[in-house]
Amino acid sequence: MTPTLILLHSLLRWAVILIMVTVTATMAFRYAKASAWTGTDRVAALIFTIVLDTELLVGLVLYGVSPITRGAMKDMATAMHEPSVRFFVAEHPTIMVLAVLFAHLGSVFAKKASTDRLKFGRATAFFAVSTGLVLWGIPWFRLMALS
Ligand code: HEM
Image 1: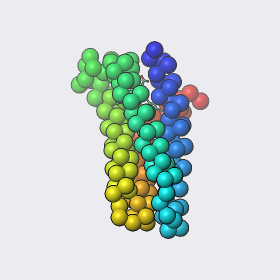
Image 2: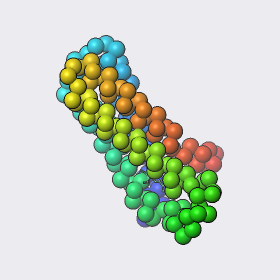
Image 3: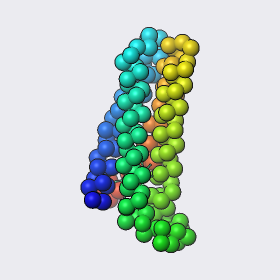
């Protein structure tokens, strides 16, 4: 089960990145054009959070079964001194949870904004931070190790 979960978590990253970048760029473009906020924008913001929540859920399950995290639990002090292990035990989950938090804050603040321009402005700012965190928190070194 674990290799399948890791593969799912790994592949889902591409959908996450594609959707996050596309929605953030669209929000910024519509902010610049002073567009009217429509139902489509609401759905786009919803998709942004849903795809990230899904990856978060897979990540949380993975945290319980991954050989890296399970191994680390046996001797946390040593694990925290090993950068490649500490990354998956502490840094990667923390950065990604922050990204999820910013995504939800962006969605809520955009919804509560009094004008359409403010909705796009808030969505752009929060989604950009969230996307930046995800891009920062992804273990790209794993991809490089495969080549
Ligand atoms: C929400 C956005 C997230 C993205 C885009 C993401 C992405 C990734 C990627 C690309 C990998 C490497 C997979 C591979 O090498 O094939 C990975 C590994 C991992 N992720 Fe995430 N992750 C996210 C959130 C989380 C969260 C919130 C947790 C834990 C609470 C988590 C736990 C892990 C663990 C434990 C591994 C290592 C699994 C192993 O190789 O044994 N991830 N993640």
